[in-house]
Amino acid sequence: MAKQSIIPVILSGGSGTRLWPLSREHYPKQFLPITSEKTLLQETILRASGEGFANPIIVCNINHRFIVAEQLRKINVTPKAILLEPVGRNTAPAAAIAALVAIKENPQSQLLILPADHSIAKPEALQEAIMQGTKAVCQGHLLTFGITPSGPETGYGYIKQGSPLPNHKTCYSVAQFIEKPPQAKAEAYLASGDYAWNSGMFLFAAEDYLKELETHHPEMMQKMHQALENSIHDMDFIRLDEEAFMACPSDSIDYAVMEHTQKAAMIPVDLGWNDVGAWTSLWDIGNKDEKGNVTHGDVVTEDVGQSYLRSEGPLVAALGVDDMVIVATPDAVLVSPKDRVQDTKKIVEKLRKEGREEHKFHIRVYRPWGWYQALDVSERFQVKRIMVKPGEKLSLQMHHHRAEHWVVVSGTAMVTRDEETILLSENESAYIPIGTKHRLENPGKLPLHLIEVQSGTYLGEDDIVRFEDSYGRIMSKTS
Image (tube, rainbow, N blue to C red; front, side):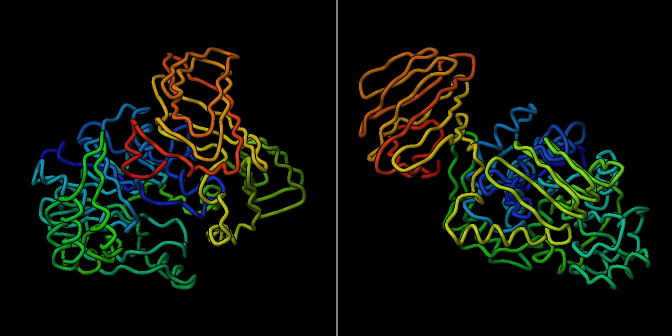
């Protein structure tokens, strides 16, 4: 099979709750530069690009579509498709939709399924394993990548290696998939040498995967056909049909297909792999000082050992603690023993139940046109800092309950106010009364920065009536 028919399918639907407060629902970990200057999503795309790979298919949550598009633009990658999930339904439906898209263009396509939030220290080893595995895939096998374990990890599933495939030196049948084991069993698996960690990465022919899914999970296949057939093309995105997608069963590729098929195969690999599933993962792969600490940002320590300390703004000072995780963002601080960080998701659930916003948004909220950041909030007023990217514009909108005053700090603003259009430069301002139809745009070549002062009886983001929008947000009712 031609190398160029391998299509990377990047699954970017996760919310990364165990990396709160850095990871938030509307800006989760795959979009953050956690392990390098590039984001996890960008790193994932780049390690499956170049010779032998087609342009990628990205599957993501509809609320993340503009973040995905912007991060692809920054690394000069044009996707084959960006598929928008209205809700999360795990990896099996996502892979099915990507396979249906791929076979429309080329029925012989091979798909490389990659979660967007993994760290791989040896990308060249992954590319070598992919090329080794294509022969097995051409013979009808559904291949998974088994990670050579570096310790008795209880947080990962395991794969038991079977006998070698005929005429293959590096590919093996799968003897068994195993859930996350207790410590004693993990130690026994490591000692035997017959087990690998389950990476959640796969390589298979699109048609072979769909045939197996049809056999073992026909209801899922039916719903995914409907979701794609009734999808809507919106700019560079494909909006999957919400009704069909929400009716689809939620299941992983492992549970839906790999544990049932007779065609499961594996290739063991040593990738320097980490699923970046918790703060201890970043401690594991981080550069440690002489006391075993990993620090990031403005951090000062005294008599601290074996800890992970990170600041995204304020000074973090730690004294006399060991085996701790301390993470500070501008609006939240997490303090936890290292052996309890897997429970960070319980904090996120508490925030959700209490109706708070800290699990959803960072203090800086990104939008397709730029971002805004709350500077001060009190009863009947709010002050924001706003950045609009060159050539971009907000929707033509109106508010029922608040007035707005815009002061330009730098750049040039084009302001529409009912039938009036005015051009503002630095230190100039405009007032938008309640009920006035208005729009803000940046006609210049530099970012526009301004201060917005809101005043009124209600200041919520849902007090927006949109009349025109460049980003399809009238249709989706998303921000």
